[in-house]
Image (tube, rainbow, N blue to C red; front, side, top):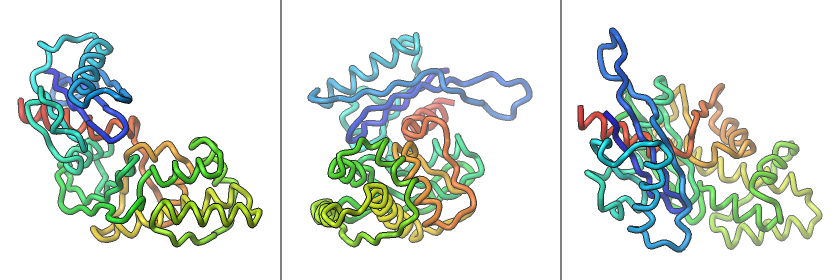
Amino acid sequence: MITAGIDMGSRTIKVVFMESLDVAGAPQLKYGVKGKHIMFPDELDPDMAAEKAYADALAGAGITSGQVSRIVATGAGRKQVKFASEDVTEVGAGARGAVFMCPTAKTVIDVGAEEGRGVKANADGKVVDFAGNEKCAAGAGAFAESMSRALQLSLKDFGEASLRSDKSIPMNAQCTVFAESEVVSLIHASTPKEDIAKSVLDAVASRVCAMVRRVGIEDEVVLIGGMVHNPGFVKSLKEALGVDRLHLPELPEYISALGAALIAAEQSA
């Protein structure tokens, strides 16, 4: 049995196919990733973008639509996936996918381009409690992206530059516009770029940490979403949380789509 999860995010569309595996002696069905695909919709109409992403994912995985028994959509644009059997929230899909990839996880932190959230999950990947970012640009990748442009650095170089700093410069602005003003002031003060980068990522991590504390930080914390690829942010977040270990799963940006595909599989079983 093959199922699909489609994550209609604010910047990208992710598709994951899960296949049930016949594991001898296993008390329940086990699942493996059959295929995955990511697409930048650009100027495409959301409905067309969803259909194209799904068609391209099918082709890439070497399967046909007839082989897929159920499709579950998630993400900010999940209602645009008209061909989905059902849609679920990003919170539920992210928690389910994160616990599948890291079975011991109890606290799931999801930081993507536009949103950040903290989730407390149980052993089955079900949501016990959650909190999301509520302030402009707080706790999201777009904040770091905007600041990297202000420093004329790629996001990759921005994250790596922060690792070369050991300074702690407070950044108080909650809004991107005002934060850019702070960055400009630091530039005019000849503050090294690596120190500014660390300041920005420390600020994002601090806001994410404050959000997660509202649901409680337990051992075995897992980080998902695109910001997993930013080593400077990962370091800042680990220090802000005060944890010994921060789990970084494979395919971090696909976790919500993977979770949606798992939910589809469980509904079809």
